[in-house]
Image (cartoon, rainbow, N blue to C red):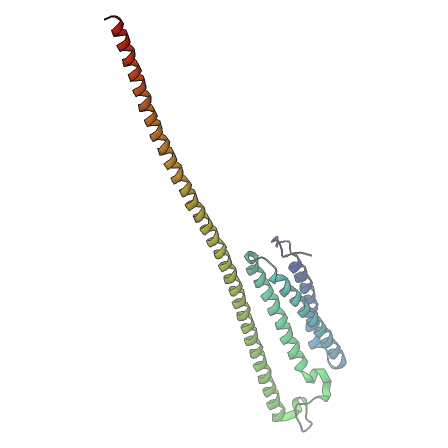
Length: 235
């Protein structure tokens, strides 16, 4: 199913993969919303299902990445923006699933404890609070690292896009330069033809003037001869 707002030629397959990805993301979001309400084996099963949905989303992103490389440059900027938005959404889902997977107390039930002495929950005392705080700090650091990685990926994608646009622009300029050079050569050639034509016309004009003078001279001589003959007869 293609995006009805996307009428650009060459983007149909990208839009088809995009529509599939949206369905997978909706299903994934539903699974992620269910995980916090589960524990033990049901939670493990829900996490596994979410992981499979993420794998499918990654595969669709890979197909979209291949398709957008074949899209004409004038339409690629908008497509790249849409792709980066989907990629960011999938990465956000990955971080959320990772955070839910790291919640071992919910994953393993009441058997899990952060306290090596065997205490759990509110009865764990200061050690439990300290371990929980350390774990939260670790998760926060991991989340910051993930966000930094995504920003680096986005910057790299933008740099690649800019490089691609620059290369395409240089290629267009090279073609335009060749066209201008060819036109210039044709103009020089035409100018040479015009110069030769002007010289030919000037030569023809000179010959016509010479022929006219000769014709006038011959007519004048004939008239004078006729006058001389007539004069000699009546003399």
